[in-house]
Length: 231
Length: 107
Image 1: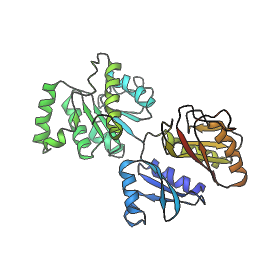
Image 2: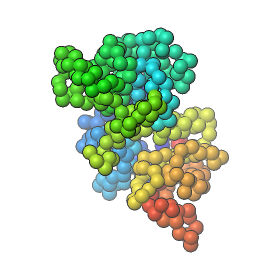
Image 3: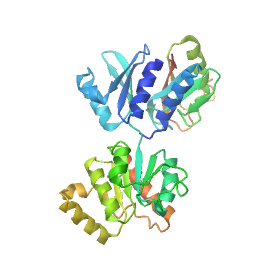
Image 4: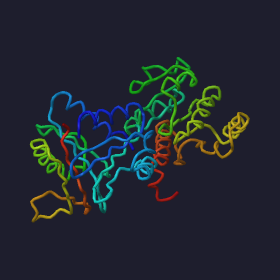
């Protein structure tokens, strides 16, 4: 592979764009296909399916052996709320190779001392999320403040961006009120149902670290949905 | 989809730009219970330093040896590893799976 091609692939990743490297196994010749260019490609159908599933693999085409290296953008987690749970969540999420950012406009919470491992933005979500380049399908959002003023705008942005995982802390009653507010804001019930609330798998979590485990387990179960034994 | 295999591609670029000879190994096919999924990478430099994993440790040694030849002559190679066989000269996978690994030079 040419260094220039490797650089181009890495640049797509840095820009959070999906790309596929098509390598001719016999000769080693390779080319890069960006997701935006897939429709015009001779392998359009095959590549579109690969972009959908995110799976790399070998194919045979007219006697040619090709390998498709599918590179999806790095998975990101935005935690809304620089709270105790986030302090446990951030280092664990880093261990899962997630690109973590913590957002909380309350400057007393959002300090580097409380979050030595990850970037912390002491801003409202409406300012912080655009600064992060906006949300996308490869981003998970966990709303953990209990405060609708902070959580709701982030939830709305996450729903609009079709984030693969959206979770919100709070009891069933709190969530029922949240659903009413989101409906009043114009969201459909089916869309609102994509929010995991109360957040986290039901493992009886008590401590912040246990809640962090339940949130991350739920996040992974969405990320790996197609590999689950039960739907 | 997790980022670590892409981090390895970043590292491959960094190594090459620093003037090191670099080969890239990629798992292109698996059968049975293979330890690392298709698309997993191992990057190797001319001195045998490596980063990443194609099998969780079972066949990396062989891949690195082959990578030295790929760096030497610039020709890509396809390697296949199966169940560990005491009579075979090559390393094997104790898990019982089979994998094919493509090794190419970053030029």
